[in-house]
Image (cartoon, rainbow, N blue to C red; front, top):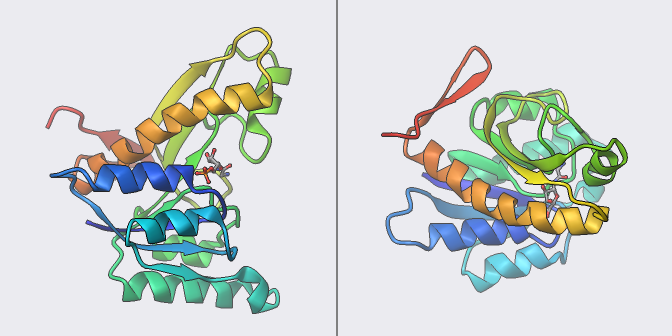
Amino acid sequence: MKIGVLISGRGSNLQSLIDATAEPGFPAAIALVISNIPDVYGLERAKLAGIPTRVVDHKSFAGDKAAFEDALHAELSAAGVELVCLAGFMRLLSAGFVNRWHDKLINIHPSLLPAYKGLHTHQRAIEAGEKFGGCTIHFVRPAMDDGPIILQAPVPIIAGDTPDTLATRVLVEEHRIYPEAVRLIASGRVRVDGERALVDQNK
Ligand code: GAR
């Protein structure tokens, strides 16, 4: 399965996908990496791995979100992408784009959804006295951080945790479950039924 990865920054989750897809027998390959921000380190990671990259800079579309998303769609389609992976892509995608990639667009979010949608997830979880933070891989729907949950990993919140210390431990789990979710989807083990993702772990 050809995947496209959308990034906005350092691309550590992209790196976990690069590493996984390099393993023999992995059922997906990265066809294209797109960043909406020029010169981010994630683009370097892709180039070092010999993966084609594009910059589709939202700022060059003068607020025309539909045109920005049309450009993203055109690049992904031209590369033959079958599954789009948002990996720290920090632009909200509108219903037009999301519906064109229905059940073919996944995201990683640093909380146990549906708790803590949006930003500053670790800080908010610590302040609320939660005992667990974590991360979620989900199919994308038009509402922010919404959609059928594919995989989650809980991470204990321990005394003295700061948003940074928690983020570091959650990131370890992000890098484990994102490639795993792609592997499951690319091997046909995930289907969506009534807005719930059913994962066949035993096939
Ligand atoms: C990751 O922690 C990811 O879960 C988060 O941004 C970080 C990107 O790091 N995504 C979101 O907050 C999306 N709402 P990375 O660039 O090193 O992969």
